[in-house]
Image (spheres, rainbow, N blue to C red):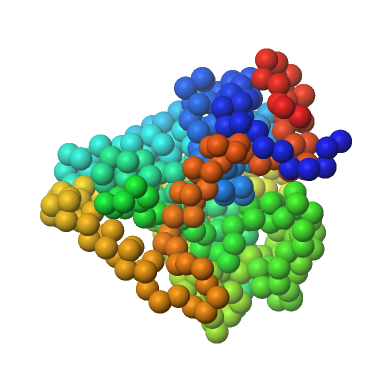
Length: 368
């Protein structure tokens, strides 16, 4: 077996991922959305949320924990708001439709906000603000998730990694896009370390006794059972601002559960108390703002661009080559990976081969 990382052309991988979803009963249009969201992560260099998650999606569909056909019900709606029930369908499909609603409302009345319940993993949060940015709007997306993060001074995982994504257009080609978990790292980073057979750095995870944990495979096996927990953004305790990450996670939880009367905290666990698997019940919240409702769009674009340029041209720390602004590295990655192809390491290659063989996908041979 080839033990080196290979690079697969984006088009080949896109067709394969689409075929995998279609073979499990996901409608073609929805399969294309799911593939686009997963590949968007890989293109931006966010391997934790890319095609490495394909096997997780396909396994959940096959076991009945995820519905391949998405039913999108608008339960409450006003000129600028809506509440949606996703009925445990495909998270990327639900999220894309909900963000589309928010954008359309913002274009009509200046602001659009959509709350979603009973959804599932929706990929990288940054995908959805970028939908708004491409249409000249400000966008924001947040989601709760299965419990894997310790509250400050807590020893029991209660929160998900609860990411916050915020995007805004500028007068540059590269938009501003902040997309980050409210934990020190997202769970997916541990999965990437596991595929690369690497240990977990100290300071990311604590065990049930508050001690540092570094065995990546052991952590992943025990994370869902409460044996380990990720620290909130800022780390353990309050010395480096861990309580701020904890507070931000709670903001996300409120937006993703309270507004839509959805599941929260330990009710989002992937298993029931008896250990049997259960549906994810995730909640999301999407926001879009029409810049023109606040003032001339051109002035906003220039001001935002000036802010970013001011930061990038400020004095650098000794030894630092340059200062980046949020979303810039990912924007550069996307242009590079479009040319080089998506990197596939041996363990990810094995998972993709399992998907191919289990689903008997033909006519989409992977180049390995």
